[in-house]
Length: 219
Image (cartoon, rainbow, N blue to C red; front, side, top):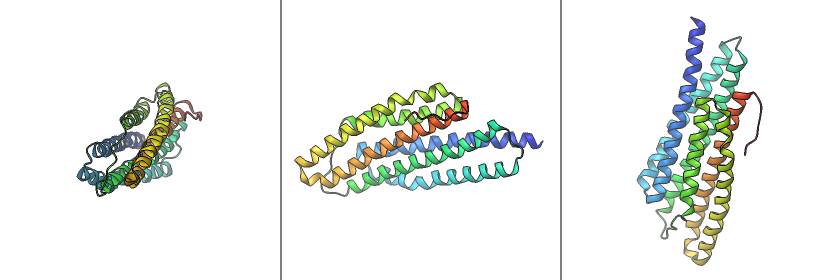
C-alpha cells in the first residue's frame, strides 16, 4: 500500500511538471501574440498569470523534498527523476519569467510616443524557441534522449537570429533617434527569447541525464 502511494506521488510529480510546462508554453505564446498585435490587455493577462506558474513551481519543489525525505530507501532511477523534476521546474519558472518580461516590455512600449515594428526575423526566432520548449518537454514525457539531442541545431539558429536582430534593431534606432527607447524594448524581447531557448536546452540536458545517467552539454 505504501509503495502504491509512493508510485502515485511519483506519477503526480511528472504530471504536474508537464502541466506547468503547458502553462509556460501558453504564457510565451500569449506574450508573443501581445507583441504581434501591440495588445496591452493581453500583455497584462500574461503578467497577472505569472503568479500561477510560480505557485505550481513552489508546490513541485515542496512535494519533491517531502517525497525524498519520507520515502527511504529510494531507488536510483526515482532519485534521478525527483532531482530532474525539480531542475526542470526551475527552468520552466525562468521561461515564465521571460514571457512576463516580454509582456512588460509590450505594455511599456504601447505607452511610448513611437513604436518600433518587430523585425521580420523575430517571427522565426519566436517559433523556433516555442518549438524547442515543446520538444524538450516532449523528450521528458517520452524519456527520449535522442529527441533531446535534436535541440542543438535549433539553438545555434536562435543564437544567429539574436545577432541579426540586435544589429537590425540598433541600425534602425540610429536612423530614427525617436525610436531609441522602443529599440531597447525590442532588444530586451529578443534577449528574452534567446534565454528561453537556452533554458529549453537545459531541460533537454536534464532529460539526457535522466535517461542515460550521464551529464552532457548540448548548448
